[in-house]
Amino acid sequence: MQGSRLLRLRALKALIHMRLPSYQRVLLIIFVVTLPLVNPWVRGDGVGYYAYVRALLVEHHLSFEIDWRRANPSFFMDNADAEGHISPSSYTPTGRVNNRFAVGPSLLWAPFLIPVHGVMLTLQRVGFSVRADGFSGPYVVTMALATALYGFVGLWISFRLASLYAPERWTFLATLGVWFASSLPVYMYFDPAYSHAHSVFAVAFFLWYWHRTRPQRTMAQWAILGLLSGLMLDIYYLNISILLVPFLESLRRYWLAWRAPGHDWEALRKLFLANALYSCVTILAFLPTLITRQIIYGNPLELGYGGVRLSYSIHPDLWQPLFSSDHGLLTWTPIVIPAVVGLVLLRRYDRELATYCLATVAALYYVVACHPACQALWRHGGSSFGNRYFLPLTPFFVLGLAVTLQEAARGLKHARTAYVTSALVIGGLILWNLAFIFQWGTGLVPHRGPISWKRMAYNQVEVVPGKLGGELKSYFIHRSEMMQRIEREDVQQLRRERGQVGD
Image (cartoon, rainbow, N blue to C red; front, side, top):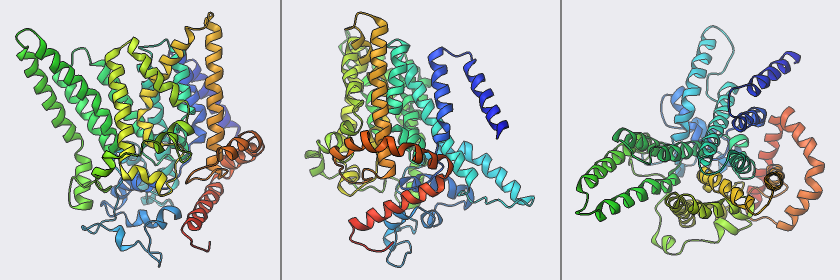
């Protein structure tokens, strides 16, 4: 034990003395310090995301029966018949289990899990009693750590991008704020088998590379942008909204070339060829999804979520995603409000980028408000902390919050006062959010459905401080038992809602 502590202290000292700019070094130290929060747990939607890499590594096919049978009870309940078997309705016409979840997270986990599987097979062959089944500790711990790493790299890239528009002292606070005062901690640490931390990474990488190549993009750079676009779509289908950025940029360039004296036909031709190449490479990078859809559904264009009806498109549910007590984005994670305000203020620095960012935020909001699969989160008791569908916008929120903090500081005479005030506000939002996450994780507020704000506020002040120490101790020392208890409570809630009885 003492040797382990000594190693950790040496690692922290090495991080502190790394030759990185100070704010980036602090971000890295915070990430390393928070790694013990990582929860090696596959549950809920994460069962479907993780099943691709596990099934291919171990069974070498995409049937998923074993993954569904080994899933957490609350997930299996939705896919089981009265006898406790996978229900016939859970199979597709091709005879495969209906795994509608995206393959992208497994693509990102694969570089970490393939070596682990090789080591486990080797140990098994030489006589060690290990389970090379994809479910045992080494696999799940590796998956969880990889998720946290992708989430952090996405935040770090977002910090670097935002630092082009605001000093690092503000982008540092903005990154910390979005990191710990949003829904991200839940899906970066607590539920790592979901796709959201991977989305943050992919979108941040895409946005940074798009911005870096923005002045004069070569054909090769358009191709790389297409690869990043396809990766975003492989990870999370709603990331299609992010593609508005290059689409609107291209429309603007077409317009400028057309308005040039005599029309700039050469510029129009080059841009058209670049767009064609970009589109082809995006489709090429999206092939893993198309192939898995063909295998599972017999149709590469069948995503498994059903179509968007015209009635949903004409009459979107605009209130629920943002303002409801049932996982509303702004009500559960209010730090998003100054972040969106900052995207409006960004027009003072970069009118074009601000327009693209606001259009993308609006597009994702509209898709979430329209799509029945997203509406199922609140209409059918989905379990989520906040509105997780907006997590792909994390890099946009870091940028917007940094601009808001910079602009707010202009109203204060002393720079030190402005920074301390901003730090206190961000720190307060972080503490409030972490206490709220604690309530949600321990069942003080329902995992599903609307919550009572009065009860939630009372818990924040009166209940959380008293329970925090004991629950954190259980999380670090008796985590397996704690997760089993949370799962039992979740199953009981589901059964009460469905009028079922029994344990």
